Image 1 (cartoon, rainbow, N blue to C red):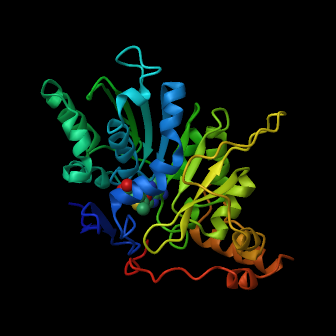
Image 2 (image 1 turned 180 degrees about the vertical axis):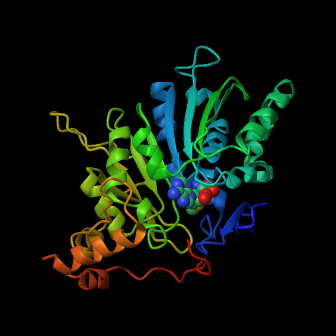
Length: 341
Ligand SMILES: C[S@@+](CC[C@H](N)C(=O)[O-])C[C@H]1O[C@@H](n2cnc3c(N)ncnc32)[C@H](O)[C@@H]1O
């Protein structure tokens, strides 16, 4: 067990961990599994995409314990296969490719414990006895904490029911790795620690890189954050913004969509469970609070990023955010407000 990370059981019984350095919990207190499904899998529209395309490719940024990828796999396996069968003609018709980036390989070692929880029963029940060895070999490979920085772990397997899952895990710094990624993605799951603690992982410049990776497939970006600075950065990078429903103490996350520039003017198809930003959120975004973190060159120090933003805010003709913020509706008392997230 890495010393820096303290295991914590969340309210749905699934395992998360508390990061000793930032003091932040890796997941929403309401549940690590619940959050992965609620903030990432459900509003991503990936199930619909898979039906149409037959394969999907996802960037899991800040992979950590791996919930967002594995919850997607688990939920896909729980689908009635007849719902997908219109396209499926051979055993390998559905391929899910995951490219994951996690700076600290110690985090990978949690995976077997994460998957022990009953939230992942669908996955476990789908593994035919003949594939057990392959499944556990795959897990061993994916939870190898001895891996060197920047040494990719790659595995592909048909572990369950004919589905093909491909993993490429980079034990790398997000800012260093993302600009080097090539090819097209259907979704980015962005799940860094909070912008207050790690502003360098929430900059408009990093989001531009995501836009590049998502553009051709008109992919989607999902994050648990609804902060104005983050939405401002996504907007500046070119994304069209929507909100995802709240969970626990959080009022909702953000879905970024590549705008549809087709001349027929057909509206962008918004995945289920996402909605337009509310009027007060739009107004707030246009204030100084909506000015993004910047990191030209993707190497700027944390301190410099914070001070550049403070300077830009001080010099900005935009109004302060306080008036717009007063229009934010009061939510139910925070039931899960003890730890951050
Ligand atoms: C909020 S947790 C992510 C939770 C994760 N998605 C999960 O399901 O467990 C943030 C993760 O970012 C990782 N991290 C921190 N700094 C990073 C960096 N510069 N590049 C990549 N990953 C980083 C942390 O080790 C941690 O696992």
